[in-house]
Image (cartoon, rainbow, N blue to C red):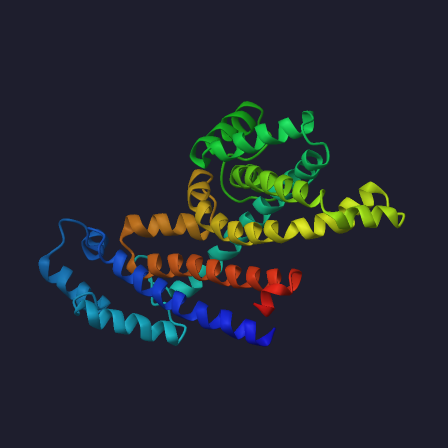
Length: 306
């Protein structure tokens, strides 16, 4: 297990370095001058040059890249050009909100997908099976940028059940979590259904029933565990995808997370803040992918052997 862990860590390090380089390169290709946006169009040329020199934006791009990578190795993400404070401090304030939204969305997806997928696999070609297929297709077909405003119009404005936007308690988490978790619920429902349906035809289930276990007990104790291996992989990868999908949802609901911060930083051409936000999301995705592989290896020892 230790060798497997070291091998996966060795693969994660170059990915993190590549992501850091891509983030730095792409953000500097975005049109617009952050200094002119900070000072305004009517600023004196001397003031613009002085601020650009103070921020280090007049240095060659290669020098800026080496400085950026050196700061990353020291854990320094730089200072925000707009807010004039360390990027790490801003991320520490925003990151918990994004994680909270992603976890809540995942819980919504699992609460819907697990029972619906199990019923669909257990009662194949029944009403439950047909309904699960319809829900899965509907869930993956509804985009966040449409579902979010519709939920706001219906449950926040029409019935006044939940807050329209912002983070002001548990009630404000409901609509964003449903918006972000619906598509994942549809995907996981199909995955649970197909994986469990395949396991229900395995010979070991007949042996377990012959030993006295009930059909329901066999499904929940044996078949569901084996069927959870591919589902676990999808859950781990999709949890990382929730962080990127949260950018749209956070913007719709004015949720104070990293995704909304990145959009605002792009509009302000705040290079260090954009780099820090995207890098935080990307590295979280890499870490979650690594943890998923490790958990996958625990569920299926053959992975470690291979």
